[in-house]
Amino acid sequence: MAFTLPELGYAYDALEPHIDARTMEIHHTKHHNGYTNKLNAAIDGTDLDGKSIEDILTGLDMTNGAVRNNGGGFYNHSLFWKVIAPEDRGRLSGPLKDAIDAAFGSKDGFAEAFAKAAGTRFGSGWAWLCKHDGGKVEICSTPNQDNPLMPGVGCGGTPILGIDVWEHAYYLNYQNRRPDYVKAFIDIINWNEVERRYEAS
Ligand code: MN
Image (tube, rainbow, N blue to C red; front, side, top):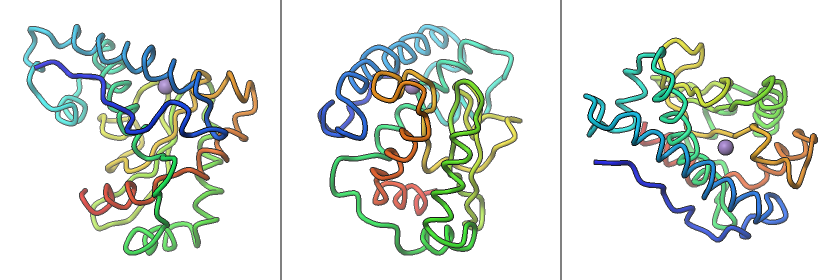
């Protein structure tokens, strides 16, 4: 059972001016599609074939570069499209708000810490908000297409929010101005979805 490229759930231009249509289209149809196809090729005929992506990543042999890079790329982008949205984003509330306030003092404190993690990730990678057992939340970052589900990446728990800071995610519109892209991303976080993931994990 091969993995398939998920739909965004909104139009490529729906996130403008925060993220431009051309970037969204290339990111989805070229980058995410490429990870999806290469993941399928890497697991075809192996004992990973038929497992869920979560099971593949949590039990990953980190020396398996093809599955690490493309399985990470498939999972990370599938999450990325859902945790931002053009509308009906809701607002931070409930148990997730309590956890964020406990960890960062406030929503502004969270935004500052998240922007710092995204801004200081050298080269390509991701910054994450993760939920740990008991409900505590933590911000961390990973290089390349690694993610907190993978063993031994120094960043654990269940990812409930993630930002792609590879240049392909922002370069056409923001060039080298990663902090401006991160700020725009934070403005379009789909809190309804992040909260749903917090409560489901
Ligand atoms: Mn990407």
